[in-house]
Length: 253
Length: 335
Image 1 (cartoon, rainbow over the protein chains, first blue to last red):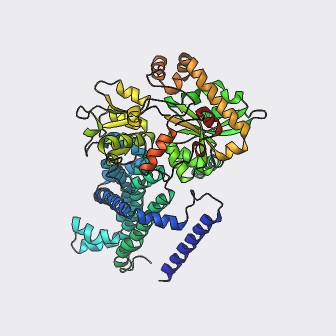
Image 2: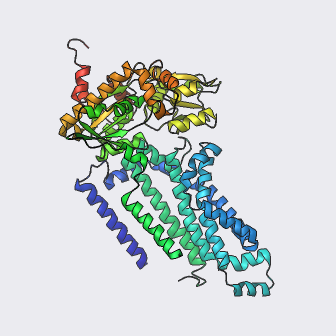
Image 3: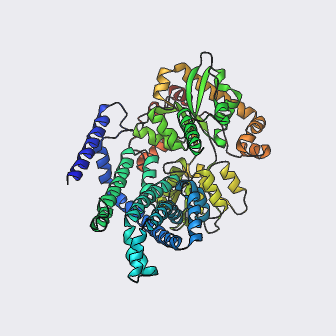
């Protein structure tokens, strides 16, 4: 509770600071629109923002779930088969440092200018941190726990689900956190560099339009929504999973 | 050994990040400071319509009038406009609609000169599309960005032919010209492209690619495809610099119109196009490098009526400087 209060205080300070800056007259209101304008823009565009946000989340949902599936599969195989492990770590070494936005031109050529490109970018950006963390998690399971599992007669899939998965959960959650953040960044960035099409397009397209129409308060309204969703996912969904698993099991402080 | 290597790499990284890279390209761009030149920061832009700017640079027309030019590169017209707003740039070139959107929102700049009248057309390869009435949901139209000249022209045609200026907005895909052209040639996803030279000419050179809407048809006459903007601050504080800028562009445009052959020769390596092809493009029907400004108020009236901007300039002096007003003049008696 005290932690939430502290967060709130910091947010309030930031908002006050913003408003003071906006009202100081040091910068044209074009660059620092006052809070009132941003809120007004939010309420004017609330329908479109809601639609665009849902659209973004659905794209990220599709891409992210593919990433999670592939990451578990590859990380799982890598733990059991040495050649695969080497292959995966080499691939990771090559691909992980590549910013997702750098492969955009190629995605555009391969998948066209539609949603498939955006989903490909989302998968690309979230896959590597997921694999890295899941694989690390699996490898960090203490040998004694694995032995105990084996002594209890667990094998293969069962051993995976009942011993390795819970034991590596802290790592997996870290992977999810980073992967989710990167998926968001990638989807917004991709839509802003190569704008999606008018009918179908997420919050990145909204920002893009507002930028070109120079409706700066609108752009800040879009940013506010992106921040709020980030906070919601981080502090409610991921925190819920954490509280009911690793915190409950006393795995993490 | 390893520690030494790490230390070395770190040192290199820190030096680079603190001093910045001075690559060959960068130093070549720097102009040696004039003896007592007026400084001006101009957006460096690329494309066939920017040929006068490139010629002015190559032939030193700005330096001739005592200007010390700092060329600034931006990723898009939107970024150049933001730089005008934040005071990082003194002069830039853009279409009338993006300028008006900026003016409406308070970007402190006005039109300093017309720049070019250029063909701009909606092209398609799809035999089922023969007019904008055939553009049904499911088709995609590429254009550079929302609020661009192309977008407003399409909106004008949509209002006239479909009864709703926003009828085609849901079909739009924002793509930079080269990417749009690549998608068109590959016939991938994009069914129509609203574009400008040289991309327009390249698309039209392919078999089966046709223009279904010309800019002049959409607008109902001639209009400046691009105008030159200067910030209020620069105009007010540096009258000599402003005059030198105008005169530099004037001279470049006059020179290019008299020497298209030679201009094509000078610019051919810059565009990576053969000289003959570039000459053909620069002399294409409808290309006109001119500082006369066409269509300023017509664009404003349409954009106000359809809600792209919130106010109308009361008279031209709100959006253009005295030299533009002098060219347009004021005819007494009758309308």
